[in-house]
Amino acid sequence: MPFTRVAVEGGRMSPLFVGSGRAVIAALLAAAALWLTRQQMPRGTQWVRVAVVAGGAVVGFPLLTSYALTTAPASHGAVVIALLPAATAVMAVIRGRERPRTSFWVAAGIGAIAAVVFAAIQGGGLAGLHRSDLLLFAAVVVCAIGYAEGGLLSRQLGSWQTISWALVLASPLMLVLTGVSIVQQPPTGSVTEWGAFAYLAVVSMFLGFFAWYRGLAIGPMAQVSQVQLTQPVISICWAALLLHEHLAWPTVLGGSAVIGCALLAVRARNRGNRPRALLLGAAG
Picture 1 (cartoon, rainbow, N blue to C red):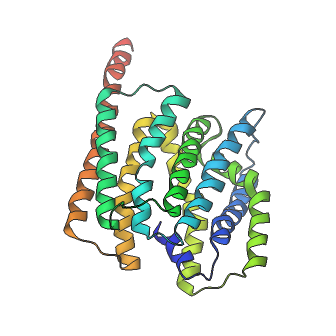
Picture 2: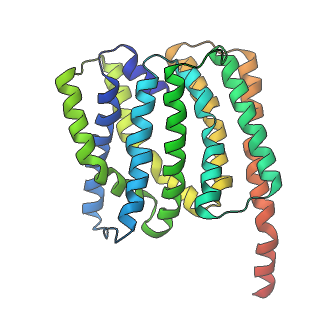
Picture 3: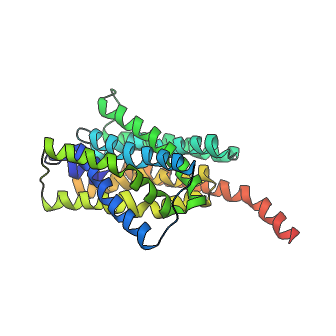
């Protein structure tokens, strides 16, 4: 969130360029990694599932958040994105047929509420629904779908392979969009703005998914996704450091509550798995 805001805030890089251009660079890295390691291509319906991942994580989320953050502060963006863990958990239940414990839903629900309240206080409240909010809500939905499908597909293709094939599949569209954005508004920017764009391309769009999809693949996805509850905390802290957005004691207290809920959700998963582990040990 903060680096996307840095890239688009000055208006010298269009949101279309930031959202699509970073995917083109990441796709080049992905194609090189797949070719050098001689990975086997997806087969049959796996391509459809790769397309779902690409639509959510490669195309939808970057473009929607880039447009939203041209007007919304990074801290305000965290208000809506704080709903992503809960949305991912719902998608994991629907798509992966997971059945989390009641204690998980309690912790996840409290965490989502705490994250929204905490980020709303930091971002100036939720008075009035703006175009940027609608874009961020849409980003949450498509990203949750991409995360859930990517977590399942990573169990077959591998974590970094899944995001790599999604990037390659989406690259023709993103290349066209990048070309259109350059024709409409040739991108310029400071060293800081180009550095933020490079981070989005290499880390956010590529390397970060290695660990994320690996974690979702290990699962259960509904519980693992709650680690994202710390994202609004981290986003607002970075926004304060990089963009000098206000950071007060209520933010520190709210952030601690959010992280605590994430830990409770993970502990609910561990307690749920313990009886099965004991049974397997006894059977061995």
